[in-house]
Length: 235
Image (cartoon, rainbow, N blue to C red):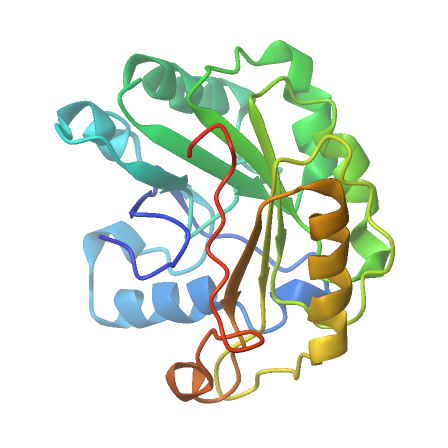
């Protein structure tokens, strides 16, 4: 089971990545991968170098109970070092494991858009992009090229205002602050601006956390309540 509030489990046929934008500065996956490497865990023998793991491709086929699955929580499925043939293998497994719902999230929206029409997008896939500040809103336009029933935004870590968002084809918005010893602060006004836009467009809004050095203490209450909305396709 996953500790990530908006999913149930993770599946990592790929591990490893590299920093491409400001949101990557304090990457939790990099820290975890390097720690597991030091612990001599075989899957992380390469540390945070991009590595394909064909041996775990078929794992979802053995999961009996339906799950919400975050794909590549320890990498980026559309990383430039991942061959397109391997990406197609991942989607082939997703198509067969149709009792599960798979969430694919990327910062590499340009590669996502490049392959969008070459991928057979199963009906049990949600596609999303990360938008950590206004500079990366172009990723939303790239996401629009994906033929999937659910498109979502992960505005996490929210490290600066994002401004006006085009939510006309977005089915879900996740917002969260950065956590850890070097966490950058998130202002409530930035969150409120996004929440208001979601309310006006009837887009489900999920507030994940305030983050900070002690994310458990900071919690995830916003205006004295939690926001756990899911895409209407899942409700």
